[in-house]
Image (cartoon, rainbow, N blue to C red; front, side, top):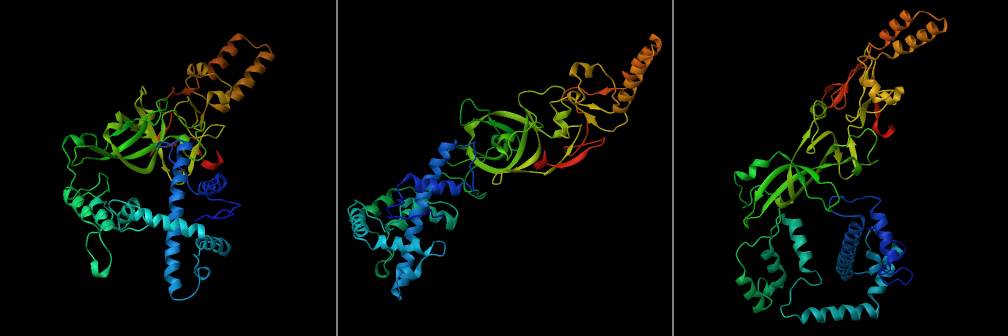
Length: 423
């Protein structure tokens, strides 16, 4: 729990002030982030704020309840503060709890809870909180069980009795085993699966983006289930684009490059727009034509840390960059390495007219050619040198796989290994 300089009821930093919650959120974002697939920055901030407020109320309520029990055995609030909170902050909170304003607010809350048509026995804890506690403890959510827990007496002499007849009547009208429509990941649940559901299992699919102007999301279907209400749900493993990783998109990232994420999710099958193909790096470089539904992946992405693996990659050319299949490269004739035409001050059109390329031959032959011209040698020798230079090139076209590929890593030539953070 992070506490800015202040606490509940302190005038200089009020819990209702924007500064208090801005400080909380800024601290939270030092350790966590959000998935842009599901929320914009403003939406994520609003969600974080709602959760922080709820967690703060819950934490304070639990701390007060614990302190109240310990005080019965002797001592004061100040002697039973939580370890995560500074003593001064805890002192000011306890002062607020002992204030007339807090006591009036607490009494009003108790009166309001007692005035409801069907009172509950969960005290200050909401039904939603009781439900979350149940899920955390038992795994599978069950509305009826939580309802009973909130509307049955806890006293030893009245244990198991309904708080009111109205509460009992409501539970009698509810269908048996009315579990919430939530996927808890239990393979032994009562959801049914059809043969058609298995058609897309293992396939890669395009899913509707959160905003119309965004590219569709890409994911691999892990499981498809039709629940007892007839809704088709899909469990997917996401692919992430380079923009989502730490460092963002870089020059060597191809336009169709994806990272296989460790993030799984379950959602409605209605979000699927169609199928696509995520190739291995080697398969992608061999494609004669790259279609709109063709992608490739050669790295894995950790959603929580936004890091990718492996951390070291092969680099090529004078620029020492990883291979990007969208760019043409030329291989040195004596297998010394691969080069981008623009790094050799050559256009792609010029490169495509060549067969082989030897960096050393080009340099020496060019010097020799200049010397021949300088001494006014015959056109015959000039022609011979010209032919010599321009028949020692070997060029691969765009997206034609100019590398021997093993497990998505390029081999051949004088390749080096570099840490991704240094590129």
